[in-house]
Image (cartoon, rainbow, N blue to C red; front, side):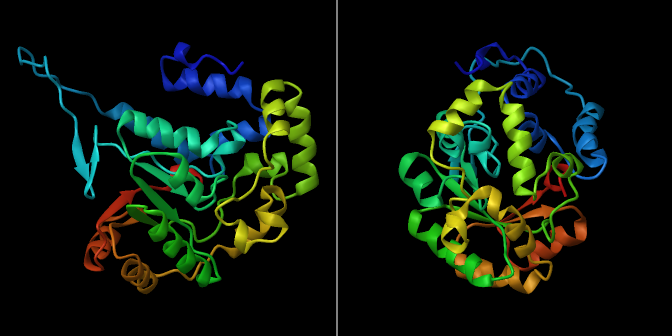
Length: 284
C-alpha cells in the first residue's frame, strides 16, 4: 500500500515520506533546485522572518476564507500551482491533484509538461482549471495549446516568463537526466527500494509528455524527448509575444515569474490580469 499520509503532520513529514517511497532520481527531481540550490533554500528560509501577531477576544466561531480569484470562486486565497510530470511521483498524477484541489475548493493549474493531457484533465476532474503555458521555438505549438485550452474550458492562462532555458539542476545531471540509458538504469536500481512505485509504473500506461505528445516524436515518450523539449525552450520570448498570447486567449491572463517592480508594472501596462511572483521554486 501507499504510505499513510494521514500520519504526516507537516511538510517535512511529507518530504520524508516521499523520499522513502520514490527512487532517488525521481525524488531528487521533485525535491531539487538549480546550481547549489541557494535560491531554493532561501525561498523556504525567508518565511522564518515573519510572524503572526494575533488579536484576542474576537468572535472567531465562524471563519470564512472564501474569495474570488480572477472570477473563479475559491474556498481560500490559494490556487494549486502547476507541477510537471506528476505521474512520476504517483500513478494517478495530475488527476489526483486536480481532484484534491476540487475537494479543497481551490482552482487547479496544469503544466504544459503534464503527464496527463489537458483534455483528459478537463473531462476526468471537476472544478475550475488554469493552464501554465511554456513557449517553444515553434510558436505554432503555443498557439495550438491556447486553442485547445479554450475548447476544453480552462478558465485562466499563465504565461511562463522565467524559463528562457532549463536551469542547471545538478542533482538531475548527476542522476542522468537527459541521458536516456543512464537515467533508466539509475531509476531502475533505485526502484528496487521502492517496489510499490515500480509496480505502479509497470502496470500503468507509459510515461508520456501527454499534453505535448502530438507535437513530439516517439509518441511523447518522456525519457526520449527530455532533451528535445529543453532545446525547444525559446529564449527570444518578449513582451510583444505576451501581448499576442493575451489577445489570442481573451480571458484571465497571468504572467508567471515576475521578480521585480519594473516587470510587475510592465505586466499591468500590457493588460495582464494578474502576476505570479516566482523564481520557479529556485529550479531555474
